[in-house]
Image (cartoon, rainbow, N blue to C red):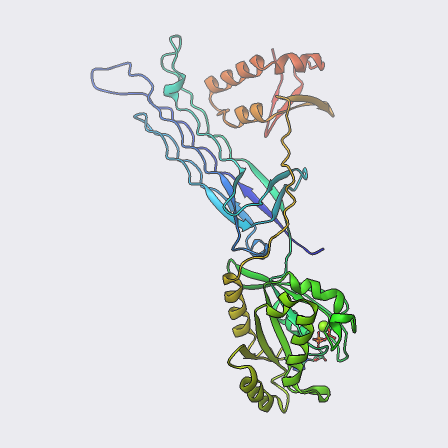
Length: 420
Ligand SMILES: Nc1nc2c(ncn2[C@@H]2O[C@H](COP(=O)(O)OP(=O)(O)OP(=O)(O)O)[C@@H](O)[C@H]2O)c(=O)[nH]1
Ligand SMILES: [Mg+2]
């Protein structure tokens, strides 16, 4: 089985900070708080797109961040939200958390969207902390950091275009020129003994998968040569690139070769025989090829597109590849088997406490979020955090784990000394 794989980093946008501001007007000495809330950070969203075929673009760009929310301002002005970041990925992509291996998404349907990293909530401005006891709070929340994680993406590759042709026609040379596939290449028939897949990147967001199989000979459909077992690989492609040794090396006639191979394909399966084909007239760098090209054009030029190429020098391959990419996009996709794996949802405890080398670690999304949103320079804000720690039962839990005054507590990115 061939898999395409990519490892990327995603981060939701941070929430904007809440604002501390007091109303100040003439003749109103004790104006109330009017600091606005920060805006929400954008989410990182994956969208399944059947037009995409490989993960190759994720090897060129590996960091993806959604926009952050704007900070709140005075006069109760709320910060604007950050825009979501939509990442398009092929149908059939599995997305896992790279650390835990947890399956986060299985993109099975075109257009399906999954939020993979949430943006942070905006911090609340001081206007929201006013109470009858504290009419002029001087604290605001910081924005919540956006979720961040490394992802492991995986896609089962399905070949879009298959190479067909006689042994030694130059199929493996061709795939090695246009993709990162490194098949064995040699000047004897049946160098290739198992299929190779290569990802061909045409331009940004345009790529397809090419399959190289062992060469076919007369009688292949009935089991002669190596071709038989591999013809089924071609059946699942959308288009065939019929590679011909235009120079007729080895004394064969390229005009005949084309017919022989097509007869084998039809005999194996009529469907394969009817599959769209383009002709790659290969080895154009060799003597005699130009004359044979004219003969090929005369014989098949009305029914087939013919591309003179040299897999050895690279001449003509760009034109062939662009055209193949264009044709593939118009042809219906063969069904991709989807795993339909359920996406795991774990029920997490609210928080956990454990001790390591004398330090008490408190873990949990909720409390880590509160800590990240607290402005530690601000006394009122820190007091509020202490109250939250108590109310959530974290203080009791720390005590039952044996914490003493002066011990170190770690929550998220913050460490402090425990006191009553
Ligand atoms: N001069 C020239 N030689 C080529 C060209 N393409 C391939 N060759 C040579 O032809 C021989 C066969 O090439 P391969 O790419 O192994 O052919 P294949 O079709 O994969 O052969 P099988 O795997 O045996 O079916 C090698 O010696 C290549 O170097 C070309 O465009 N010009
Ligand atoms: Mg080969």
